[in-house]
Amino acid sequence: QVQLVESGGGLVQAGGSLNLSCAASGSFVSIVSINAMAWYRQAPGKQRDLVARIDSGGSTIYADSVKGRFTISRDNAKNTVYLQMNSLKPEDTANYYCNLGGTVGYWGQGTQVTVSS
Image 1 (cartoon, helix red, strand yellow):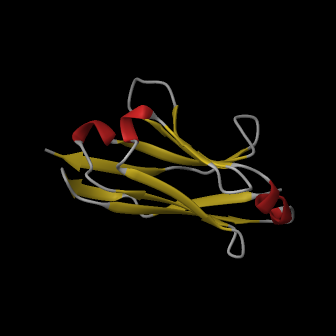
Image 2 (spheres, rainbow, N blue to C red):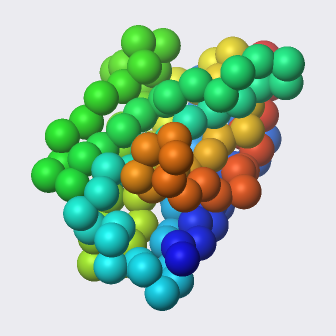
């Protein structure tokens, strides 16, 4: 099994920045380095949407709404994925979830990001 624990969420004013982290642990943690990792977000009453994804080779994709503002990165030695969020907007407010291995893979418990206007 793999456990994913997110951190770094909080309350920030519009235009501010946050850096989310997701640390993986567990008996199967060795699979982290060979799998894609991603961040999703879900606002109240809405579906969970992909924010950013990074594959094992470091290639990235982003949702159009965050391109140029968010950066996903990973440190395989630490089994950790990051999401640097800059120029935050109120519409970025959501619970942010870390994912390993796609939608049928592993999920973290989520970290709340609230952006005030």
